Length: 283
Ligand code: GUN
Image (cartoon, rainbow, N blue to C red; front, side, top):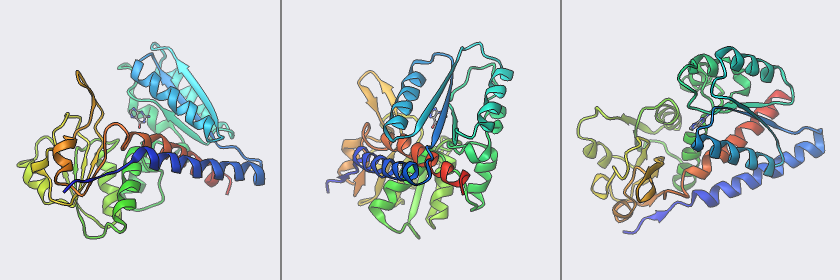
């Protein structure tokens, strides 16, 4: 079997196009423009690239982008004051603080200072709790993108066995909550799990989010399974995922490539969350 290659890049482009149309309608009918504020502290090169593309894609979708770049020495109080201003600014519908923050900053306090309705990353404790308890929540962008790709390929996920490898707050845990809300039977595996290959071989859906290059191989995968690769690992041979694409593609029914799979979905979902936040803020 040769697996279908799930084209996240094309899916994300279509999603951005739909969002741009809705943004245009919001402007025409209600004179309302969604605004996203992105906060970057310090000069981490990878974060600069991410923040740059977020800004560009926000503007390309017809939204307002507000970038706040602070020096690496910015204090906890500086950041809290900035977030306070952004919370109070009615032109700002979404706030994203790029992670990681410098070591001297208390990341948890900063994230939780973001107004729940403007938390387009879905990282606040309030949104995390809302997602876990089935209340209306802002959902973290990467797992939301994975869910969209899974629903698009599989339709109803009810009763399917899903294995999420990785238990991070940004991907693994919210991914598990989303799959559970879609009635999948969910296993969360991690570095201490015993016999990971046996666990993944029982899965109809595998979501790999561990940061270990090429860890999931073809002999770990049930024939016909759908495999979603969240890994972005910079290695000597370039950017590689957590999934060994070639061997998995011989067994799986469908698999996302790296790059061009989940990655482009993340920013598209950020735009979707910003549009949602704007609509909710304005009734
Ligand atoms: N750093 C790496 N991924 C993310 C993300 O999804 N959101 C934020 N805010 N920072 C990140």
